[in-house]
Length: 131
Image 1 (cartoon, helix red, strand yellow):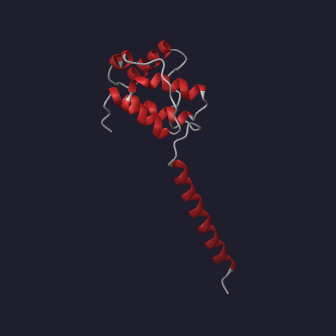
Image 2 (cartoon, one colour):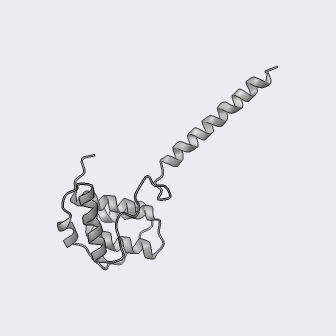
Image 3 (cartoon, helix red, strand yellow):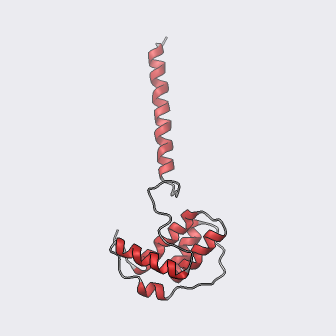
């Protein structure tokens, strides 16, 4: 008959494996609930505020000058975004729609993570990141 110590040891091992595997699942998902990512790096309250926040961000992180990208921004477009993939695809093909996307996500209470993904695509569109 196995001793109580061995049974406790096996239970503890199973418990630790479960905890560690659940932690890895959590870390694979993008979330604005934690401070690891900045989901509020750009200001979408107005076009001028947005442009200023993008310029400040570019200066802070030594990115290329965003002036050309900011000249092409659209202010009005009908959108229907249903996922982070939709957000990313839209901005990859139409980076000038980033301000419209930000307003859409804010006004329609869509997940802020979707905007973060779109912002990443926007940054790549004018600042080819070699990462």
